Length: 383
Image (cartoon, rainbow, N blue to C red; front, side, top):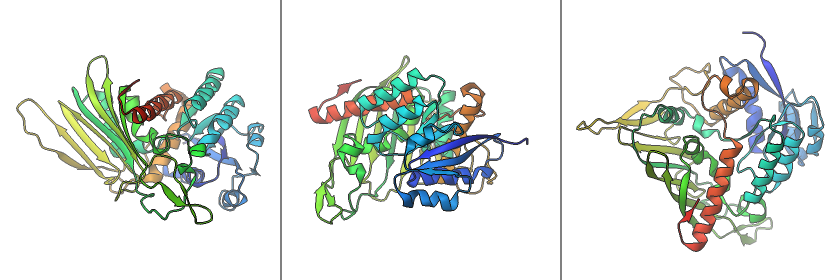
């Protein structure tokens, strides 16, 4: 293979997800057939401790700063990965886009719908800039396969769809409060804004935008220890269950979207269940190698088939099919999709699952805003 095309990245926000991106870039040789690779050349974070990790471990980093604008003024940087709290999205994302830097940003693309509108206005004013939203979990092999079955029309008439992301990291009431439980930083969406793009990515991509939503929102642990150990209010929603109706040109069906920070026994469990008259499928990252499917013909038996899913997603890797796929692999696949689309365009990509789009992020804002209203009014809200 000829030398890979390099995309020079700046990174704004050097926390957990910034480190995950750096790790994915370091594992790029794991991909078997790509002709492009990311190179992290500059990082920005107000915390010296956070940037020190990159200085020690990422040799390609040549510039470290506390001012993100220095990255935007640097002509040697092609694209930015931005992983900052929700209240900073509108300002920083708009500045990145206006500087003509391609952007992969973290969800929810703005603290609220007004902030999201500002980001979309910046995108409209700069149509040559590729902007995508981070959502790696649909690249797990089982979820990737279900998305392919949806594209193939395997399910017949859809009966019901269930999708969600559950974890239990906030089950401990003595866990110190963090910014995700503060409205002024996280926003009123709570767990929906932080987790909701992941379960909605495949349904929205499939054209399953709900016509209405009825929301059940829960604030389960209302106080947590603050910086001084004294209890402070938890202001955002821990769990959310959204009961929706989807109506397409050809059919109508219920869809349940759930996001939970307090789901006992779950550790970042993403799932997608699609039930149809001709075919049904279920998948959860809780059992990452297990994919359930049930083909059905009139008068035939109804029996779930369980397949041991191989290590196979959008982009071929060196790993044999007998080995397990994990979260870091899904991040690598998402980054490959972003770099693939940036280099070859949507039509030139080597596989069909591209990263979540700004349009899909805007749809999640409409859904979450309606969910807040639904809960407040105890009613079903039309979209």
